[in-house]
Image (cartoon, rainbow over all chains, first blue to last red; front, side, top):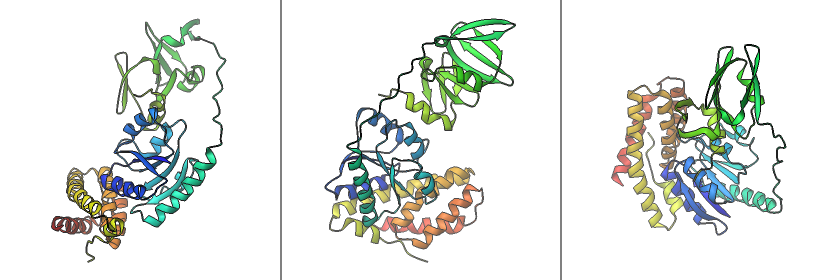
Length: 237
Length: 105
């Protein structure tokens, strides 16, 4: 089984690497000190198993899992005993190792992982249904006029009190509505809610920093909870 | 007070002296760095960040065989999350002992 390690602590990476080295069925391909590097790697490489730390700066292990479209099997490795229940809400997590890891416990986790990886070999990947919806625009009611707005022209939608501000390439519209209502109208493949007050057109992104995204000249905040979904949408090199 | 030891590292390394040397080198490098970060966070009252540092240091507490101190660190980490510094002195005495031990290796 090809595997990788993601842990911000070098000591932990070296210990896990040593245990992997003792197992003939495991092949350690790469170790990462942060999850972002690992996401980039996984965009171009397939692995069967990930040894993953939960507590890492900026991007936790659970944030990382949520960015994966088809996650491989994961063994969590952590100093925290409090996440066991949350951990097993994810089908991809096969075991939960508490640091410091012992050889015996590592072996047990590995046996579980091997059993599940082998059973998955025969599964056929299911295809996502292709959307048939060809609608390209929506209408907003402003001063008793129905104004057509092309989806592709919308850059950002911002909620302000009882109104939403729809910012397009050429014009801004203020509409009495809620972010939830417009979110339901906008196509999912183009738009993403990145903050409780902001929906963005992901095609209009210029760049992304830790907690914000630049759309045109506007810096839009990205909340921690919405960040994994944003990362999932990116075609990272 | 319990004393830091290399039992865990030696068990893990077995006959592999290269691995043992590597582990000790990492300890010598990472431990002072992590302690410095933790102390700076405490000085600036960054409770949540300090709790994360204690969380990280806990692993090294256990690697150095300090079982009772591990539980102390666990409680202290929870205290910091609640912006309470109870057990700060006790935890920092453990850190000092670890640092002194690692410097002798």
